[in-house]
Picture (cartoon, rainbow, N blue to C red):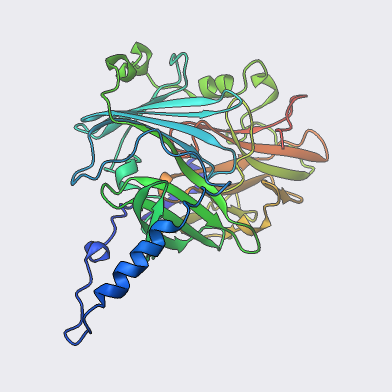
Length: 395
């Protein structure tokens, strides 16, 4: 995908290969088996006591997955998802062409998206009220189907064998991670349902980033797919800012709107990507580039190319990647100019970019990109300066 823009104007199905389940044919000159030895071995095996389950093995899913040829069209699946740092609980409910996906954090932040697979559209809002904050968009086919997971986003993956996971025969796939490490994922061999994904970053212990909690194949209730009447209108940036920072919006001026007089003195800026309402830092799952050398009289054009695996490259002007400079979810920028560009890419999920106008309320200031849903960054976002007393996000 190639995206070009002027700053002044401001996920790939992974199906295990068929050969992975192909039974092996014995060689023509293979020696016949000794059935007497086999019978003796079987008798000894029956005398062995059953091995207890490993203490660290998570509890089984609430249903034993029944092998089937086609993925179900009616179900309710619940996952934990830590791909972006904070842990979400994701609930997917499907009835044929209608799908509802809820993303919730333990702190209460929540989004709901309704997908119409026939019309290839989606509506996203923030419960409990959708008034003023419902966003509609088209989809290109990948909506996060757990039976056709795009967790690898088309990366150069390889088959890593078959394993039994919680009583289910699985195909194991491995591929590179955005951290520079690896991701290992387990898929039900019968339905291709994603059961678990573990990331191992360089020098770190393996971390579970996606885990299936439960699966229910009964038909979800009809009211689960109800769409609020308020979704007939879209939200303005002011509406979103007010909803993202309830009660404190006045202390968070928008950072990407023109202002009459930009103060001449520069300042140090700390940039964070955070989740709406809770302002919880999002610490992974994105790439960021900045241009701190813009000539306001000659705004450059930028080219951002995103590969099928979700990796972005940046070109044009003085735009350069600074992802490696983030520490604990924070990027330090010293002596920022009057205007500068920031582009944050979320792989196959989308992007958020803006021409920022400097507003220094002191020697050190915080710039926030607030997202409603990091899996869909284009749905709703706000670029703000955090000048309020309660501006600093929770670590």
